[in-house]
Image (tube, rainbow, N blue to C red):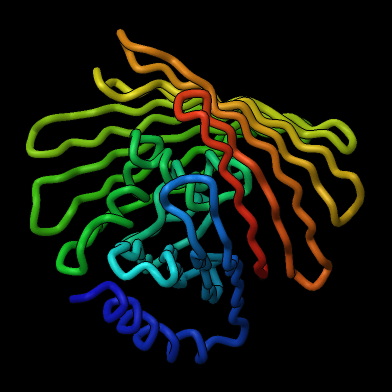
Length: 307
């Protein structure tokens, strides 16, 4: 069954149940944008969309049942040979004092617990980090065909002041497995996140581990993410980032990404961007990315809407 058909089936099955309840909670969030990138051989306009909608209804014993749906898509416009990347998410959810359990095709935990501002504000170039193993679930979801899907179970909970999450996935039609676990301690002024994921493909495994430190002080915020990949030909990453709120609508972002291929060379990528966020949800972003390795100056300008 195609992902969109499965999502529709779950929606139609659960909507009558939700409508029968006195209190139905519906929440949604997402982003839609059109951008232009230039400065390399791959230039042009592209579309990016990423969104979620959740349905929840309560029972007399303080349990909540519901469904989560999501979609992420990326496509270069006016380039016929460019492959569109799309992923769909649909999961049944049970919530209680024990936490939240999601079953079906939920989002991965690494994506939601390690969420650094896109490099230069460019969603396109930020996707490149997926290719070196920073998020195995998102990588497989965007690249697999409609004939194969990534099914799994996810748990989110809290132990004292520490948030914890874990998930396990299996790719249909192939012996490919992904396991993830994350823990985060957040004081409101600063936070520390630790996570690791294991990808097993036909018996060959590859592990990716990350640590993130994030802090806030007045109009300034910043932090660092270190990602270590247990693979001989793929690099370890260090991303140092900082932001400054000029006012309620304008923010400056800068980032330095250092990567090192084991036994080979290392290099840096520098980025700077400015974001204007209107109170209506509309936004404008303009950024530049400088690579030491290629010497390219990459420019990315985007216009979109957040909801």
